[in-house]
Image (cartoon, rainbow, N blue to C red; front, side, top):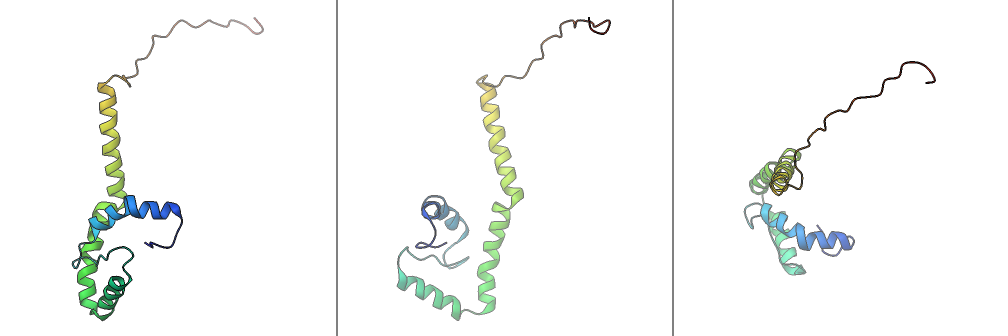
Length: 118
């Protein structure tokens, strides 16, 4: 995610929705490093720290973050979340009788056609 790059929509997502997602995944020092926005010195220090870290240290930081992403943001998890939300809304709407169960109307007799052109 770039603070300076991208269009208006990307900046909006980063400040409104993206920050919440990042904070849910990144636990400072455990699954990543969080730096204050527009703090170049803090960003440089964090990058230097990561560059100086061993491969094992980086894996210890990355593995838990990946597990969170896979568990909470995979396609299956996302579909399950949306299905649950949809069912909740549908149940509430049915309670309010907005979407009553569909009742079939009784069929009326059909006219019979006995011959051609009649």
